[in-house]
Amino acid sequence: MPQVLIVEDDDKIRTSLVRALTDHGHAVSSAHTAMSGLRQAVEDRPDVVVLDLGLPDLDGREVLRMLRAVSRVPVIVATARDDEEEIVRVLDAGADDYLIKPFGAAQLEARIRAVLRRATEQEASPSLVIGDLTVTPRAREAVLAGVTLDLSPREFDLLHYLAARHGEVVTKRDLLTDVWRVPYGGADKTVDVHLSWLRRKLGETAQQPRYLHTVRGVGVKLVDPGR
Ligand code: CA
Image (cartoon, rainbow, N blue to C red; front, side, top):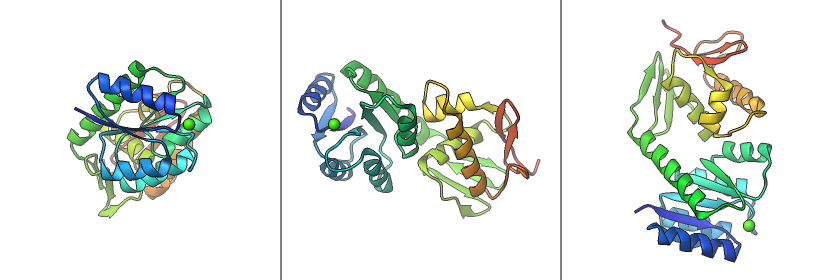
């Protein structure tokens, strides 16, 4: 039975979500401030956290950053803001998925199932070795020539996604859909920015690529530079 922590300051929303998820067999705990939510996330070790971005005591992205510093628990953010840039920023800050308010319990349950499935898949997926690069999803760790790379959650996901498809061209659309889980266009710049950060951390440039090769007008591919 998956344990769900709901962090939401609106009493009506929190109560109805807790009731609906409990009725569907989840073990549910809840918090109405960011600080109590963070404490419960650490102490109770839930399987998934549903985090309202509009909390009274801390900005949602700040909460995510603090949570990500201590935990890899899957986080679904709930936001009233249907603003693509804000959603992308939140996903970049380490959220796994998002829901735009108002949403129903059935929709939330579907997202919970999806993030839990992805987390389980990642736990089970093997390390990938491409040249001097080793990507270990279980530990969320990437090592290049013996040096552990300092990657943000999104950079790790991006690298893992490309490494799992090494030698294949991946489009920006694929990356947005599968890594950011943004179902619409217009956020290409985010992909470009993250690819350039990743390049820098891999110690290469777009002009002199080793692992990450841009395929103009199509996308990007990760290759073994020694082959
Ligand atoms: Ca709120």
